[in-house]
Length: 126
Image (cartoon, rainbow, N blue to C red; front, side, top):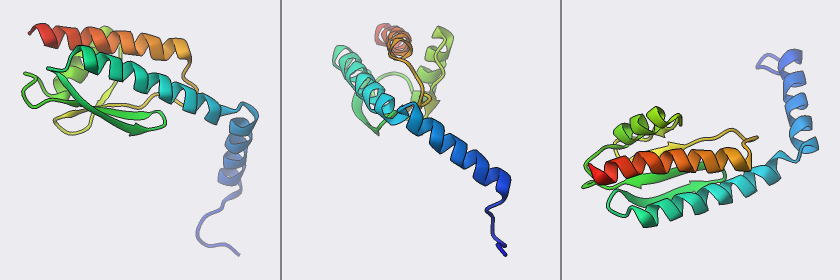
């Protein structure tokens, strides 16, 4: 008998997810889209060094620093991005976190970067 988990439904769901990820080569997409996101954020950071600082993260989870003297917090920048149609997450007062789904497409990353840059530009002019 097993007393600490491993119920049949949870096991079947886990096996189905693992099978789908392997068959669809999801991790290759994660690597490629993660590199695309890093390059795009680095480009935006270089264009707006008065607002954005260091970039960090792994895979598709990325964080970009909002400088202390940027005139806004990460939460405010996230709010600006939301007005552009992009859902992001603040990670404390000074980091904007990107957490796209594992199945995100190249086109969706491009659109997200465009929306984020529009939000940053508004803060650069403020």
